Length: 217
Image 1 (spheres, one colour):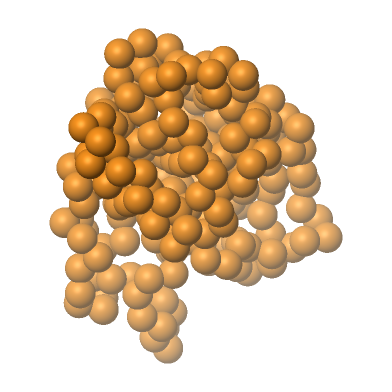
Image 2: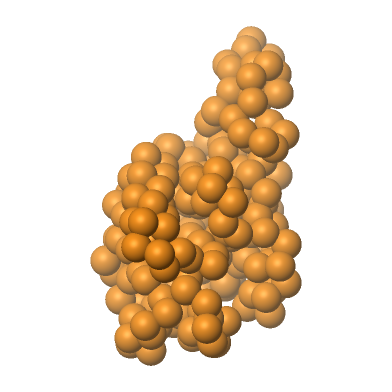
């Protein structure tokens, strides 16, 4: 049996993971709040508390819903598993466009540029849930076609959400394996033409919850 920390942004995502997941004693699901700061702080707090009580976590999972970026061809309700989590905004604004942390010349951590690695064993364990791809972590969601295309071009990610890189980064700092798993709730781009199906995304999250239970046992 492995103790797993699961980080979501809002209560609705927690509920969507399903009764089986929420009742599993080896899983702790924390509602961190929206955005990178909440996600990183909640992850660090939960990991520190677990260490202090002598019951450390074996892995950390960031999960919830996400928006599909242009050209991803991800259908609404699809589950995706991150093969990298990429900070979208960190870097430097230049006349020729935005540069990442490599251009700025300072590291974010023990990884290159803005690309936070996920744990390879966790990627293998959850790969059957859906396509593996990079997921961008944004501070500002893409509500225009230009913004969505910019995130896609800069990061190479197929989807965007607001917490994953921060969760995986916080876990990585203390040596705990981590990964991001998302379900697609919407397309990105101009608000008037975005397509949404939150119900399908929440139904898909129950598959994630069941997979977490099976993995922990």
